[in-house]
Image (cartoon, rainbow, N blue to C red; front, side):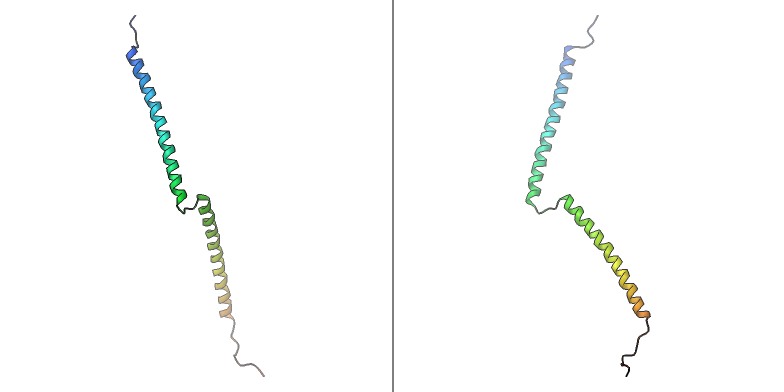
Length: 93
């Protein structure tokens, strides 16, 4: 009975498996090095964190909504003031 798998193909398969493992390890090492370089670069810059950005964004949205409510209130008060009859500027004796 002939051998269905030769030693050559077994060695080639092992070599490819090892090469894939080596490539994955190299990718993780490059990813770690790149991440640490970027973190060092960003820490030297005056950059806000995502949490700080989201907090300020939420505060701005609340302030914008309050500003809109106040604008409507002022407009209503001005309309009410304009609709009231004006009295004479002369004081009554």
